[in-house]
Image 1 (cartoon, rainbow, N blue to C red):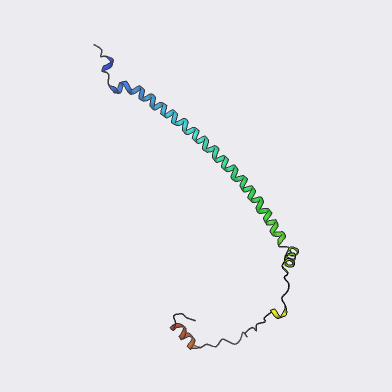
Image 2 (tube, rainbow, N blue to C red; image 1 turned 90 degrees about the vertical axis):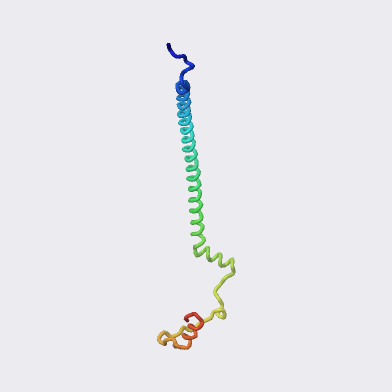
Length: 124
């Protein structure tokens, strides 16, 4: 006599349902991963575009500053700055002239200075 359906094992009853659930999870996970990946690609493209625009702005600003610096370094511009600061050549009383020591006379060596330097912990 054929066995009744209610006597079948639990694995045989829930097997097809388990396969359907796993297949749905696989398809749903794949779809979710695809959408996430497309979103990441879009976000990275948007970030790249904004950073490229920022780079163009910074390069343009850098070029303008370089031109401004070049204009400020011209002798005419520097002369205008000196006029505004009321600067001029120094007066002869403001110049100190220091004599240069002769090259052929060696410096006098004193052994006492050397010994005194070592006693204090530092060579001179």
